[in-house]
Each structure stands twice: as structure tokens, then as C-alpha cells.
Length: 199
Image (cartoon, rainbow, N blue to C red; front, side, top):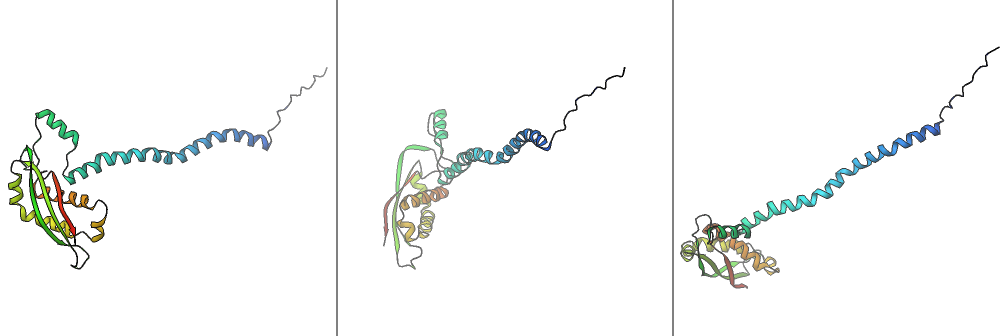
């Protein structure tokens, strides 16, 4: 007897459509990874930029502004008062605050307004407020330097600068910074503009 030939059914070879279907199944996983990696820098930028802006503002810009204006941070001054039981002494050679304030007038600062070819002028009078023991003596001793610095600051202002809203506050802060640089520390606590006339 002849052995019957056994025929195994052959596996059909995949067609091109089947090959593409198999590749298509593998493609979404790879495409998802590629898509996420393409968006990752944008996502990181959106998350990290506000955090970076807050950190720079809080730890760099605000301390520089406070230092420039001669202000001390409220937390540090409260802490110093709490530890010592009294107010903290002024920095850089200033005498320790004694409590009551002392007002020293600086009258009749007359400067030409910038950009007017000498046809307009600004007349200003100030009152400097400090609470150190020898504040009046310091201001009197340094009166020429203080007046020169004040006239220099006021002489750079144009008519449009002086007519802007908040111009007096800007002038006040510039003068406060300049006076404290001359007198040392934060000797001048406040400046009142008692006369401010453009003519």
C-alpha cells in the first residue's frame, strides 16, 4: 500500500495590506512617544516660566529696589526689634534711632526745568524727617552737598516729567535715595514737599 501523501495546509503569505496593518499597530506607540517629546519643551516652558519669574522678582528685583530706596524689609526689622527689645540701629554710621522724629526744612531750591532753554523754572521746598540723635546736626553739616544733589535731581526733570501723575512721588523717592547716600544708612525717613511750583 502506498502511503498517502500528507499535505499540510500551507500558511498563506501575508499580503501587503496585512503588513501595513501590523506596522500600523506598532506605529501609534512610537508616534505617541515622538509627539510627547516634541511638546515637552513647550510644556516645561509653560510650567517653569511663571515659577522663574516669581523667584527672580522675589529674590532679586524686590531686594534691589528696597536697597536702592533705603528701605529695610519689614520682616527683618520686626525680627531685629523682637530680639533686641528696641529698634535696630541705623546702618553705615548712622546713630541709633531715639524715637521722636526731627524735622529739618530745606527751603527755596530753584532750578531750571530741563529742555526749556532756561525759560521755565521749578521752585521747591522740602522738609526732611529723621529720628536719629544727631539728625539735625548731620543735615546742617552736609547742607551744601544735600542741596547740590537735590538741584541735580530736580534739574534733570522736563515739563512732561513734572506734569505726569505721581511725579512728586518719583522726585521724593529719588531725593530720599540721594540724601541717604550722602548721610549714610537710612538717616532720612521721609521727605515732605512743602512747595513744588513750576513757573
